[in-house]
Length: 280
Image (cartoon, rainbow, N blue to C red; front, side):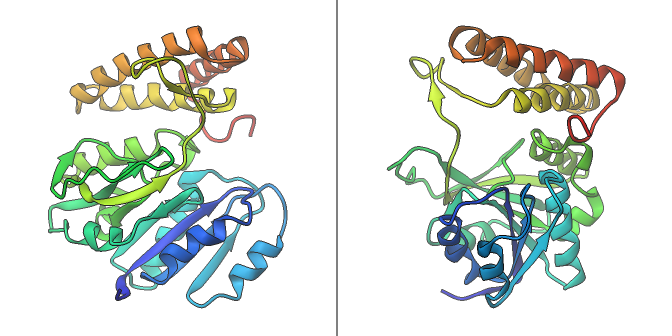
């Protein structure tokens, strides 16, 4: 397989284990440069020292967790400075399947700002077998290929969101700028998610920490406020999604009181216009 010389990739690390090296190995020989942004709480680790010695790998080390948006912006600026046209955005729990990058690139035309893969989130899950591509409203940044010209026009990811809804807001902003977001069903990414609890398809929920509940609540409300008129279809659908998530939390999730408290704090900070890292 040939290297895509117009593509740089970024992997954002947060207190990674040794297994992340296998995920990095699956992508670093498919792109011209790999930026590893370390958001870990601890200082230098043997893993980072090993990465610094690898060819075409640039480690951007932060002094703590600056959030996913800031990390993506660090890599995007570095990629633009080095003349790359595209940035492949990954997290440490993602592993591209063979052919993913080729399938993403095949979807690009001048109207496309981002192309996303199909996410395989369950152990042993098989690719869907479909090979078409189609426009979508939103997609996760993990595994997505971002056109850096579109990034320059639309502006950076929202640092103040820190985590959660960073990708959704950016997709809506790309649409606002006239760009398409495409789902490439021939491109597949193995992506780990949190533990699933609850019975049946409609009541299964991914358990998130109380802190993630805070960020999701605060940032989701801001997205509703900003895009309610521009994209009412998305906002109404997400309001229904929120009601389902809230019901699942009350019925099935552990630590309900703590999570409800953090959701309340997220609402309060949204009302105050207080964004950024919680407690920062």
